[in-house]
Image (cartoon, rainbow, N blue to C red; front, side, top):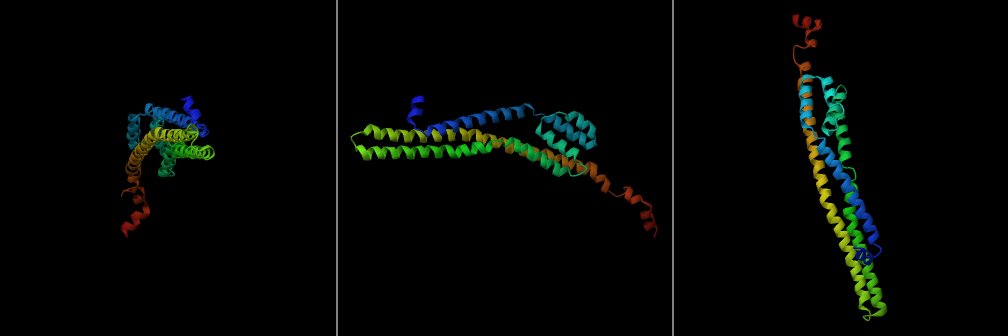
Amino acid sequence: MVEIFKNGGPVMYPLLLCSLISLTVIIERSFFWIGIGMRRNWKLVNEVLELSKRGDWNAIKEKASGSKNYVIRVLISGILHREYSLIKAMESASAEEVSRMRKYMGVLDTLITVAPLLGIFGTVIGIIDSFEVLGSSGINNPKAVTGGIAQALITTASGLAIAIITVFPYNYFNSRIEQAIRIIEKYATSFEIVYETIILAPENKPGNKSDNKPGNKEEEQK
């Protein structure tokens, strides 16, 4: 491997940096998603929805206190701001959670594009060197010509290898993000429906306090 690295020329150094960055991000994101999986507690999420049907907000705060489940954090944000704008509060909280999930994804995306380009750049440099040797010594020194071609092939192969190895975890992490977004939308919509039907709907039904005001009775008598 060391010999191949040396034969690849100067472009191998930025390719090595790309590979190290890619590996670091992949490991960091893998631990991140493993942590999310370990903190997954759908039983608690369902309990929060059940308590919200009864409007027991204090019990919800006690049960969900300190929870690191991203769905719980979104629902709690809506509960804390329910008197102002429940939907906007949950949208803001979900955007923050998704932003955490998409952290460093742009880095992987960039590396998938840049690594093959660097490989092609190394290829061009190797071919240029080969033609320079060919122009100065003709065909009397075939090893020098083939050395430049080998350098070109090594950098191309290295750039493609980095991109191919990176694209699999990149697509996997993206699929996990999309799945998490669907889960957030599912439970946020459920909570919104529960809040509107159980908490807000009775205030809009006939026979509420506004219908029993003296002014309304006088109008009915007239």
